[in-house]
Length: 158
Image 1 (tube, rainbow, N blue to C red):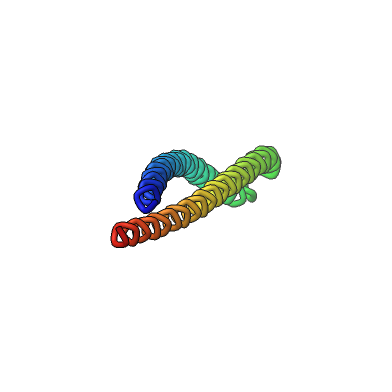
Image 2 (image 1 turned 30 degrees about the horizontal axis):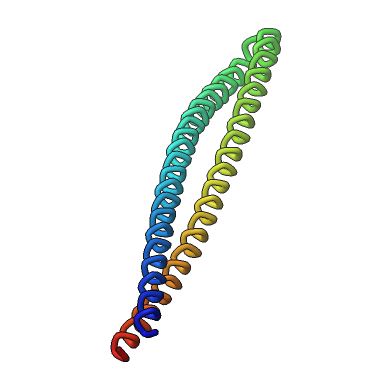
């Protein structure tokens, strides 16, 4: 009877070890996938942010340039009223275009920030899954310790 119990405990231990290996393999694969996804998303978002930053700087330079031209046109106001009116209309349109570009750039920046926040939330969810998997591993390890203790008890009784 004790020998049979010992054999049953040995089989239970083997099954738990196989299950533990499967859980470890699954956990490793999920962690690797999560890390790869997070890194890919981060790289994509950094590239997107860099592009938006470059566009924003170019728009700011255009805007500064247009403001400088507008100031020069105001200084020429005393020279010729007709010429100023024509140039001012042109410059107002350029300023509107620059503002439109700046607004578009800000929208792109917001979208990129939203995407980065989504990636962060995805990473948090993966971290929670990882924590749950680790808790399962700990539970399985504790069960193995109990089974090992039972096996030792059975052997001691024999």
